[in-house]
Length: 384
Ligand code: UD1
Ligand code: UDP
Image (tube, rainbow, N blue to C red; front, side, top):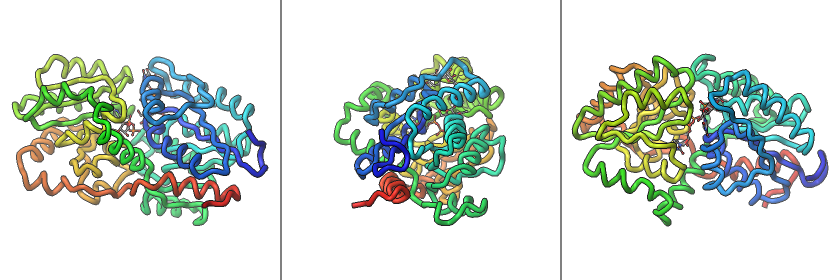
């Protein structure tokens, strides 16, 4: 790797969880396609199995893999591990720039570790704000820390750019690029269309639930653990009492999620509780669903591309564009509200049609290329 300040800048792309990997694999490829930079990948592996699922399909072989996940890890212990271990990795490879994504503990601790070494940080998916530090928790503070340190801010939307301006981020540090999740989604959707066997693991579910209205469900947020998760499980159980409905629910591996879902939803004829799906399979699930129930950030961004109504099981969202466009609706973790709104969409064709409009407020599939050009420009590398 080149040292700092020499002609071919070294860019270290860092991530640790499934959603960061999905949203950063297009960036890694775009940086490499651009040329003129020495591009490396470091993973904290804050997630293990569901990170590896993405590395494989995203065709990424990490140069550094810290393998930091532990069962049921606490925020304190995970933060400490990342800070110490990642600092060592930075000292060994001395990159000219670090790129982080979004709002996980990996994002925040890699940012701090880079800051301690005065290595500039570029923040992908910058400027998302809910305005409430406990919702989502701890993500709202993770991304604010990244925003405080970064000198390049890749905002997915104009709204995110406006939030950065309101925090006095200089105009020339803000690049509105679109969200790279749309790049990942489009490329994966094309791959699955060309090679359906990439998502054939859902053939059984498709056959079993033929003729039913499919509800795709995901849930994992820390602020929803306990009562929130029980309410989500209860609402899904209420919906699954309908004969015309089938639920497909790939369960997040977090140990605070699975037991709750198994206790309430296990063993029901029209509920499939699955292991986490790799991205091609999840893309197929979104396409075959009539309705999505989720507390995920990424699924809120992907649902509108498929024209699928998304009921967001959170109190707040930092992704208002889907709500403003009418494809997403906040339903909190209120069992009755989730059941009522989902039932309304299933029973009232006009209400369903009003939400089920395909549009892309989150990007056009070219975000990664824009990010690569901006990074190259910042380091004096000419673009073709
Ligand atoms: C993390 C992020 C969250 C992000 C989510 C995406 C933080 C604090 N949270 O939440 O912002 O939305 O990822 O999914 O950064 N586990 C496995 N295998 C895996 C992954 C997780 O067994 O491949 C289990 C482990 O027991 C692990 C636990 O899940 O300790 C929690 O993982 P962690 O990354 O701390 O939190 P998430 O809830 O996954
Ligand atoms: N996803 C996946 N398999 C699954 C569930 C989700 O590939 O079984 C993808 C989904 O398409 C989205 C991302 O994972 O791109 C979202 O991850 P998650 O909900 O874990 O995190 P968040 O986006 O809330 O941070």
